[in-house]
Image 1 (cartoon, one colour):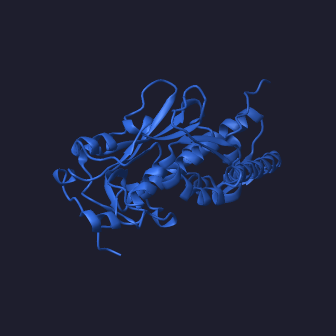
Image 2: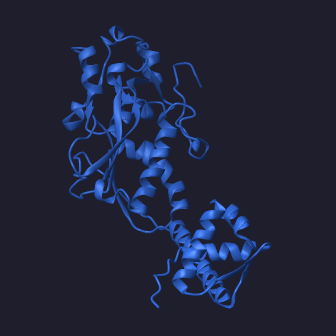
Image 3: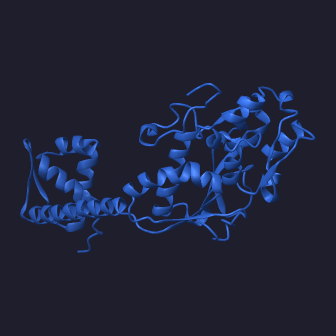
Length: 320
């Protein structure tokens, strides 16, 4: 006699009935109806060519063949649970390096503060941080993940996720404001000294907006980095345009005016498409996205906000 192939999934029905003592109770445990359980048992018995249960009004009792089947199902269930545990353990100990690129300012104010918490959660994922003026090609594999203040990235081979926008405004030192006054409007910027930017930094919208608002202003010093720009501002050399995540974090600097809407910059998290499902890359990208939302987004944007310190609140002249 030829018997049909046994379906492995039918074994869990045998195990459920053996544990529960009846098809009705097993159906409740499995989340199906009793008819489905009986149908699967009939199919298994047809494939085996022998009864698995002796049916009675009080329930189902395993036959001799049924006991062999139930014992095999128990072993398979134990192995499946062990496999689940092993996979869960592997998720908890993810490994693999991530090559990450961003600008100098974002690296210092957003990425560096969250790295300690990330390393504590994922000690097996080292992050190679690359800060450079030139933008690495993510699609071609020059980096795995990028965080960029720019318009929406275009092109194939990447997946982009928009983060909270970055505000910019004009800052000066407390000493400069005490000596020269605090310009509170765009028109009031005229006649003030400016701390300038040059090279690629000189093309940033913040500097171009500021220099257009104060034509003919004296520019006693120019620099090609945000680090130098902040130092020059703190030294009282003039007014300068900064992202608020930088300026608000400096106790010696004060905002001159509210952030102009036209200076708002989009912020994007970019991942190389072919790596987006790699566990270690996804773990880093998800962690960074949550941190950025909690730091730059509105209150309540991130449930994990208390795990990561937010930047200091804006300071105005006269506040301590």
